[in-house]
Image 1: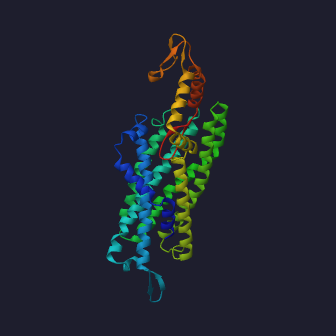
Image 2: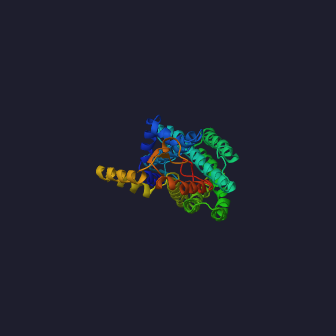
Image 3: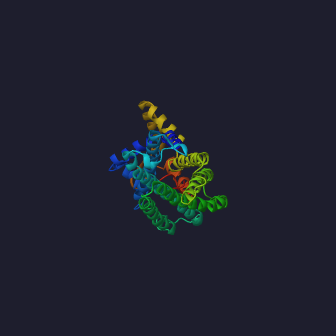
Length: 373
């Protein structure tokens, strides 16, 4: 029940609407133009976006499904034992038939979550080791490691659930053991990155990377530090319950208070870490939103006046025609008669700043991939 409440409070079923929209408009020309910035970046962004957006509703289905079933079956009184939650052997047939599909939802969602976290781990390792040298992420060993690890996670998690389906209790224990070991390993591997990242940022500043990139990477580092702590809070309790569950004598799982406490801590950890993942992968640009809103609310006459003033500043009609040097394509317009205006003179510092940003590193943001700056 706690997992159900936390999942619904965190997501409010928006992920289901996002998934539906993504599949409906999968052929959208505009979305293809935004995503397909390179030969492989479009497919990569689709994989990361779909994997994240699909994992959240699957976790909701798992948590809500078992909450409905267990509260529907409620408690039962057994002679010599007392009042306990109804064992799965006494559930109705429809509820027993729903056990395996719900566990498969959990295993698939967990494997997709590991795909996302493994991508983050490999990408930040690529960022730290690449330094200021611009290299191709898709051709690196880290990207290949992520690809192989993602395929392995997607395959082995559902297989563990299927192979142990004969006993629902063992199925739950081994599914959480497989997922807990994977999540804990990825979280532990993130600690060296958090430790070395401040040194990496100092080196970036000495190399002359612009401050906007430094600020962005610093923000991501701080969010990642908080998120790693909550990922420990998510993986460790489930790993403890799983290890205890596969033993002949379950000391922790037989204690209802201890089981409930560990489960609630794990639910809190996965909710907060997923929310921070959303912040990193889909960062909100307040400046861009304000600018877009102001532009949409500005009167058309005012926009025309501003455009006219800009055109008057840009063009000098008292000389021969010349093109702005270095302009390409549609930018190589004739600047009236005479000399270049301030727009052409501003090209040099703008290109210098762009070159400085290109000396920076790649940065990564939720289910996407972009170059910092």
